[in-house]
Length: 242
Image (cartoon, rainbow, N blue to C red):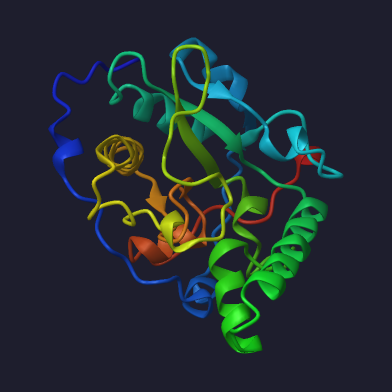
């Protein structure tokens, strides 16, 4: 059911500044696996949620031409969409991610950082890398977040599915990609868009990765860590399981 939100006062609230993720603490959390299935985000089109599989469109080998997430995330995205003003929609860019694609992204991002942040030490380069792309892992105790089906990359778009300006490109390695980066700015429309996205998702039960305004989690270890849950309920999952 689509819930029409009458007030958008939540968009007056600043996005809080958050610390970078401590992956060691994230992966310390146990996973009590749920059998919640993966579902195609195209199911959400009837609720005004668009899908544009970013990595497939970029031609990354192994990327899927559809986006899949756990069924409970489908329900929560439907709810998140109901908070948005008329004419503004959610646009899903990525969900469940094959291990092969995670490896390709990690290598690509590492190469970019080595070239563009050559002044940083190897340790600092690795720290930066870890804030923008998780280490590829099929380890049942510490899986890559997108491999759980509990992560979704999402932005905002207009009625035709055209992306709105949120200040940086999707996957841009920049301090401006941090969710709170436009809180002290003259770019009022960017600030408003970020707040709309952030608060509609958080009000729907998602957590946000502080370094990526587009990345949200539900049910996996990142989400459990953010909300101080004793355990996660989404571990490694495969499309072949469904």
